[in-house]
Image (cartoon, rainbow, N blue to C red; front, side, top):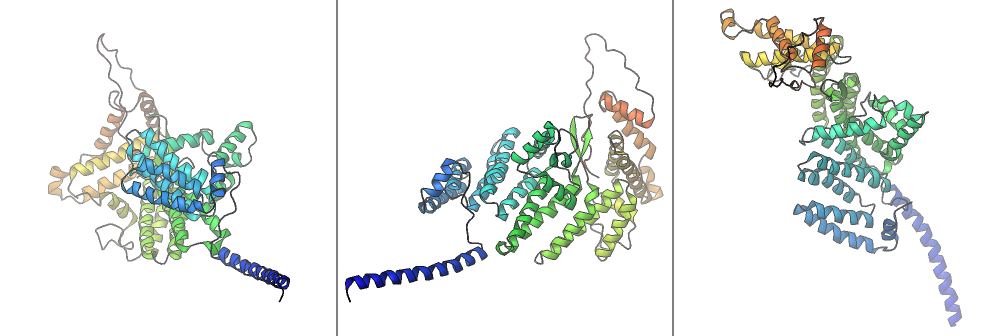
Length: 509
């Protein structure tokens, strides 16, 4: 066979093999896509450094990033988080689809590095950097990675929403301040951001979309499904990002891991639980700060979220139902304390239907819903950890409820909540006194309830140690009392007493 014929045959064979390999490659691509092994589309509009490292270095990127990742792990073990943050930044530029690096770097910023600082503004700066890293960069390169959404939602839910960090109230205040700019320092109005009419509305809508990467239409949909939510508090944002992850999962169901879906659902219903407990901002112009109130309007949706989670997560079914039962107990008590007695009775009945053989008062195994009236249960909630004959502690509880009654009276739209506190104080008083034998009333009985209420009112109206002047005037007006008599001027050289703010009132029942 001549050399020329051999070359023709080899070329023909090569062509046949190429055709065959192309067919096999198509099948491989389909399998890779089905199994979730295919990377995202090539990065678009990437910074020059990122574009260079992802294209020019080719396969060497993986080798370099592996070496840096091992070094970063060593630095983490040595608590050298600042150096690790720099290495992690390099790794994200080498491997922008390396999800674990984004997660670890954000965690270190929000948790490990932030707590190294004593000053709260410095802590907040690092927490914000962790949020921005995931929201502004990580999700841009990895929009289909559910763990990204879960981690972002968790930082809002846990780091900002919970109270484990000493600076948690500062975090909440700073976030509320930022959202106040978006919502023009008023109650959130999503409709005006979805369809902005004025230049100011357009500017704020652009701020929400471009800086905070949030879509007001999606926010409205989330509010309709899980709310009403208070978008100036972190729990609403935790629900937003977790729900956005769930929507992404619906686009590619074959690529989704069941455990990832469970963690996203968990962020949703746990954040709804927090929103129920303290998801409403109560304006208090007298102390120049915000206070939390319970968001009682979302109780039906929180209950539904728990039940859905228990149905979806068979492995943790019993744990979720236990949390659901505790939530229902809280819901009944919060409604009762806010004088929404009809709703409290309805949910107490539902609690008994769902968990008829579970006690409603801790430590009392016979306190089944069918045996314990609603009034007795709600009073028992307060007295669970109080000794029946502990006069000092019961006095403190009753007077604390009366203080909440008076301070709620002067807040806008809080009359029902105020009345709930007063009624609860009267019921706690009556429950305690009814359990004291007649021969022991003189020794351990409480003072007359009108005297206790009057003591609290006198303390609040005291010019030296009570409420600020404007708040005292508002309370007197609310109670129909005459205006405060002006005090005589102090003699020369004697300084006037300075009003001190009242002790922090209870933020929830």
